[in-house]
Length: 110
Length: 112
Image (cartoon, rainbow over all chains, first blue to last red; front, side, top):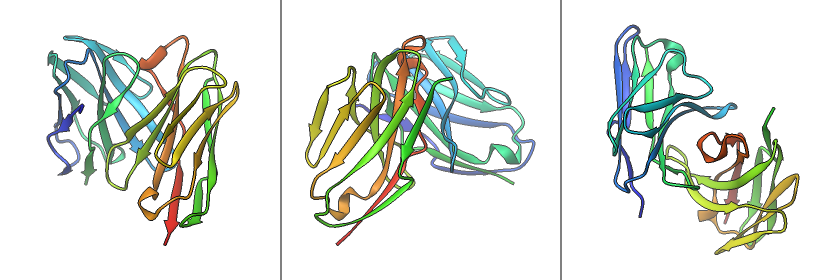
């Protein structure tokens, strides 16, 4: 079975803090993704990576950056967290035509 | 603009009462259509991929079908454990499977 592991399930951070969300996949997939999910808005793509050190912006990259130093690991960084970044963050990976998701990280920014 | 609309937003069924969820899409060429199941507080779980009109796939009580404009997820004799949000997503031809467009989901509640 494909396993996408998000290290933090629940986080509470203060406005202005730097936040790291970590994700690891164990299937040697080339592609990895970060989405956020908000009620009524569905899943929106923040960034994706198709290879180590390669990244592309998704639909809502503002306020976020990413890092992929190793194939299995993809990190989402909030340089200066703001309250409008309170959301559920989903990491995903794929090798070809199927995207598999992690369990999600609930981030609250106060 | 590529778009996915799911209906209804919410559906309440009695156990054993079959029904269908709809996913209408507008896309500049379809590479694939995906169905996911999402339980509260968890990430989406992959169910099916459909690639061309007329294709059907089944898994237990679920059957997904695809036309040129929409997909249906048919649920036959549902059980309470089928309660979840069902998400539909499309992979446009120009961006493929790297930039899926998601609908907002149908919340299904099956009562015993």
